[in-house]
Image (cartoon, rainbow, N blue to C red; front, side):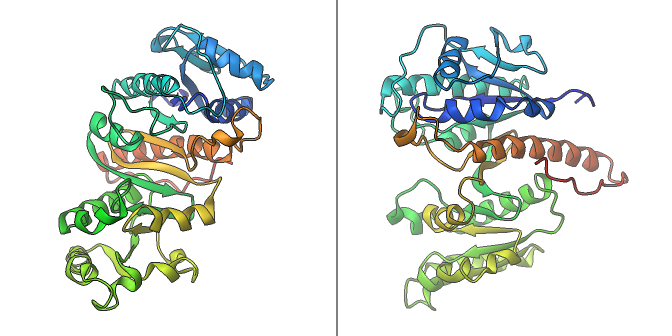
Length: 352
């Protein structure tokens, strides 16, 4: 990338009846944001103008019809659709879900074509996006198929990073899905992400147990002793600093998480409940393991407050900065890998 050229950041709108439009507008009506990136919102100028008027915002949108028309220093809106869309804030609508998919698909195509450098996705409603042609439970699974790689839901802040062995699966299926192969795959993904995406040269990773008290020596389930511990021993023998399994109930309350660069939970709520308790509103959902950068806020569509002007855009703003930082880190990592004798720069300061 040219030195003076700002990162082109794609943004998908999420569910138009939710708070996505509001947090996008609140983030980019601050013109200082344009010093860090050139945003491209995949929607339509008609739809975004409706939101601008509704929220009485001073933001200025620049409508374009093709990605090669992007103008730096502007909040670009790429017209993915031309028709007027009926917005009913807070309403659960499959019809609106169609536009969530249109925005995501157009943004992903641009990402795959290198027309944008990174992608930030506003919250979708997982039920509303389902159709005969779109049968993914969420962003992560869709992007994994389109972009390739071993995707992993990685909830991150500058000081807390939580990955998952399993994500959107029923709790009853978790033990069957956690295999030796899966454990190796997910830990390797987190390990490589910490190195190339977050510039941590020697990652230290903690793994939480599958069962209460990590099985209590087989008293409360055998999966920890029969599957998880042996896999962690194998990984550690290969030189990675991986520790556990730890009992999940006291791990965060005891502040033990502060001793590690990342924590890997066995299933969704085991990792996300403590993460969101500690970092809600400032955390970022990052899809690690892909060949492109995608982030999103750590919350959902928030239908209950949609359209009221009450949404906190803090997490979305963090997702924007995180996407920029990770993209830059990856570019530098590529350069150092190609030229190992080049001196690594000092760790960068946070943008805010």
